[in-house]
Image (cartoon, rainbow, N blue to C red; front, side):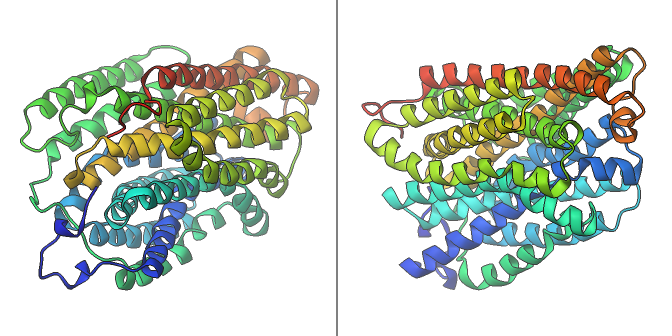
Length: 492
């Protein structure tokens, strides 16, 4: 991707980094990424406590979770373009500083709408951090070292998703839901301080203007789509708000596609939408994050509502995902070098599909849930590093920020839609199983329904929701098998 020639020749930060320095850069960018990803996954385990303390219903909680992801996903392309234009280190560390401040504001909120608002600010800040972390690594590493760095980066992202509930459970039990946001502040400040000293600057030498119109259309497209899904799940009917949001999303999608065809410097480099390996890697990654985010949204609630676990116990119960993700992420680049990327991606996706199917069909027993989570973590760790390597490898070298942003956008879009769609299925299925007019949030939190009936209704709803997640990742497996290159095909 980027090289030292991407910056001004007289920039003192262009001095090549030594081996120890590269490891320090990798550690700092990994920690920055971990903070960004942790913000979502740790919040899941705090949902029951947050619902009680802020008197929030399930659709409101979905917006607390998704307000971050919607803005994050919508602005990532702009964030990557800004990093290429104004400097990847500068944009990344500035965004992380704002992220730390917004995290403190979230922790001090005393109403659900305030949390939604501060989560929007967090999403804006994160959109300028995440693509920069990968773009810095693409500039810093080459060859086999780059593949290893991408595997570590992907593993850290996966670890943040999986380990978040563990940390979240511990801090929620100790200090309440607001502690989930305080978690972000110390590591963010460490990266800002150390990164300004260790990370060298890089940028696109063309320094083209940022395509703001396309960025605005991407926010409307993603935001309208997720809003329509969440509101349809809450009401169960296509009312005016749902239809209006869907129309806005469709119109924005058409406008975005047209804009990208004619813009001088499109946010999505031309030709990628017709590139088979890119499509296979991007779509399968998006659908994988859809399945993971949706399933964790269901499972962190199931562990507490259905099995009666405390936030700490629920977080620890998700621990098998974190452990297996780390092990599998280490193995992924080794397997990809020997077999080509198709094998780790398709095998990983197939393993995740199997784990979700186990949870959907036999997840009423705690040991089965733990086993299913371990299986999901293994597949996730195998698939994501290899798919990410293929995706960023199809992007021109001077567009490192754009390539990283594309990868991150698709992951976050999958995350947002996973919570929205799977959460909507969970909500509607619970209402159908428990009886018309039932408020799932009030029923589960207050215990107003007979415990046996409530458990049966939640099991039915969770089975439906997890089945959707499994089916979506199953589709991703087929797409990857068709489009991801094998050992004998070029990955660019």
